[in-house]
Image 1 (cartoon, rainbow, N blue to C red):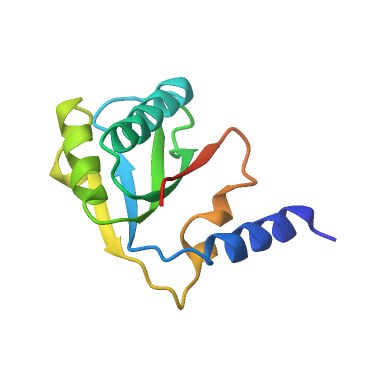
Image 2: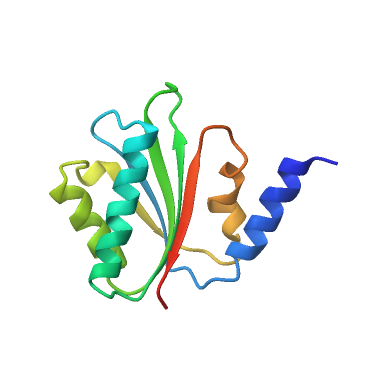
Length: 132
Protein backbone atom coordinates (compact mmCIF):
# COMPACT_ATOMS: atom_id res chain seq x y z
CA UNK A 1 0.00 0.00 0.00
CA UNK A 2 1.25 3.51 -0.81
CA UNK A 3 0.86 5.33 2.52
CA UNK A 4 1.69 8.76 1.09
CA UNK A 5 -1.08 8.40 -1.46
CA UNK A 6 -3.51 7.30 1.25
CA UNK A 7 -2.54 10.22 3.53
CA UNK A 8 -2.98 12.66 0.64
CA UNK A 9 -6.39 11.20 -0.16
CA UNK A 10 -7.57 11.40 3.46
CA UNK A 11 -6.36 14.98 3.88
CA UNK A 12 -8.02 15.91 0.60
CA UNK A 13 -11.32 14.40 1.68
CA UNK A 14 -11.20 16.14 5.06
CA UNK A 15 -10.22 19.52 3.57
CA UNK A 16 -13.01 19.17 0.99
CA UNK A 17 -15.56 19.27 3.80
CA UNK A 18 -14.89 23.01 4.22
CA UNK A 19 -16.58 25.68 2.11
CA UNK A 20 -13.48 27.29 0.58
CA UNK A 21 -13.81 30.53 -1.35
CA UNK A 22 -10.31 30.85 -2.79
CA UNK A 23 -7.14 29.06 -3.67
CA UNK A 24 -4.12 31.35 -3.41
CA UNK A 25 -0.46 30.96 -4.30
CA UNK A 26 2.23 33.22 -2.88
CA UNK A 27 5.73 33.48 -4.30
CA UNK A 28 7.97 35.94 -2.52
CA UNK A 29 10.11 38.76 -3.91
CA UNK A 30 12.99 37.61 -1.72
CA UNK A 31 14.41 34.24 -0.73
CA UNK A 32 12.28 33.08 2.20
CA UNK A 33 13.53 30.08 4.14
CA UNK A 34 11.35 27.57 5.96
CA UNK A 35 11.59 29.24 9.38
CA UNK A 36 10.79 32.69 8.00
CA UNK A 37 7.90 31.26 5.97
CA UNK A 38 6.31 29.86 9.12
CA UNK A 39 6.77 33.26 10.82
CA UNK A 40 5.04 34.99 7.90
CA UNK A 41 2.08 32.61 7.93
CA UNK A 42 1.81 32.73 11.73
CA UNK A 43 1.86 36.55 11.59
CA UNK A 44 -0.91 36.57 9.00
CA UNK A 45 -3.08 34.22 11.07
CA UNK A 46 -2.42 36.31 14.19
CA UNK A 47 -3.61 39.39 12.26
CA UNK A 48 -6.89 37.65 11.35
CA UNK A 49 -7.43 36.53 14.93
CA UNK A 50 -6.60 39.95 16.36
CA UNK A 51 -9.23 41.48 14.09
CA UNK A 52 -11.74 38.74 14.99
CA UNK A 53 -12.25 38.17 11.25
CA UNK A 54 -14.26 34.96 10.73
CA UNK A 55 -12.09 32.66 8.65
CA UNK A 56 -10.79 29.23 7.85
CA UNK A 57 -7.32 29.20 6.30
CA UNK A 58 -5.30 26.13 5.39
CA UNK A 59 -1.79 26.82 4.17
CA UNK A 60 1.03 24.66 2.97
CA UNK A 61 4.62 25.73 2.34
CA UNK A 62 6.84 23.99 -0.15
CA UNK A 63 10.24 24.63 -1.63
CA UNK A 64 10.62 26.04 -5.12
CA UNK A 65 12.62 24.11 -7.69
CA UNK A 66 15.87 25.80 -6.57
CA UNK A 67 15.60 23.94 -3.25
CA UNK A 68 16.15 26.83 -0.85
CA UNK A 69 13.36 29.33 -1.46
CA UNK A 70 9.81 28.63 -0.33
CA UNK A 71 6.34 29.55 -1.50
CA UNK A 72 2.83 28.94 -0.20
CA UNK A 73 -0.50 27.55 -1.31
CA UNK A 74 -3.59 28.48 0.67
CA UNK A 75 -7.25 27.56 0.83
CA UNK A 76 -9.27 30.46 2.18
CA UNK A 77 -12.79 30.80 3.51
CA UNK A 78 -14.14 34.08 4.79
CA UNK A 79 -15.14 37.51 3.63
CA UNK A 80 -12.27 39.99 3.72
CA UNK A 81 -9.54 37.39 4.22
CA UNK A 82 -8.06 37.86 0.74
CA UNK A 83 -7.90 41.62 1.30
CA UNK A 84 -6.12 41.12 4.64
CA UNK A 85 -3.68 38.65 3.11
CA UNK A 86 -2.76 41.02 0.29
CA UNK A 87 -2.45 43.94 2.69
CA UNK A 88 -0.31 42.00 5.17
CA UNK A 89 2.12 40.77 2.51
CA UNK A 90 2.48 44.22 0.93
CA UNK A 91 2.99 45.93 4.30
CA UNK A 92 5.84 43.49 4.98
CA UNK A 93 7.27 44.21 1.48
CA UNK A 94 7.17 40.50 0.68
CA UNK A 95 5.30 40.60 -2.63
CA UNK A 96 4.15 42.69 -5.52
CA UNK A 97 1.04 42.17 -7.66
CA UNK A 98 2.68 39.40 -9.70
CA UNK A 99 3.62 37.34 -6.63
CA UNK A 100 0.12 36.57 -5.36
CA UNK A 101 -2.48 34.70 -7.38
CA UNK A 102 -6.05 34.14 -6.24
CA UNK A 103 -8.42 31.77 -7.99
CA UNK A 104 -12.00 30.90 -7.15
CA UNK A 105 -12.11 27.52 -5.45
CA UNK A 106 -13.75 24.87 -7.60
CA UNK A 107 -15.35 22.37 -5.22
CA UNK A 108 -15.81 19.78 -7.95
CA UNK A 109 -12.02 19.43 -8.15
CA UNK A 110 -11.69 18.90 -4.39
CA UNK A 111 -9.05 20.14 -2.00
CA UNK A 112 -6.59 17.43 -2.97
CA UNK A 113 -6.33 19.05 -6.39
CA UNK A 114 -5.14 22.24 -4.73
CA UNK A 115 -3.09 21.46 -1.65
CA UNK A 116 -3.12 18.00 -0.09
CA UNK A 117 -0.83 16.59 -2.77
CA UNK A 118 2.00 18.52 -1.07
CA UNK A 119 1.43 17.28 2.49
CA UNK A 120 3.66 14.21 2.30
CA UNK A 121 6.59 15.95 0.61
CA UNK A 122 9.76 16.30 2.65
CA UNK A 123 10.57 19.58 4.39
CA UNK A 124 7.17 21.17 4.13
CA UNK A 125 5.13 23.07 6.68
CA UNK A 126 1.36 23.30 6.87
CA UNK A 127 -1.28 24.47 9.29
CA UNK A 128 -4.93 25.39 9.58
CA UNK A 129 -6.64 28.24 11.42
CA UNK A 130 -10.34 28.63 12.03
CA UNK A 131 -12.47 30.97 14.10
CA UNK A 132 -15.87 30.36 12.54
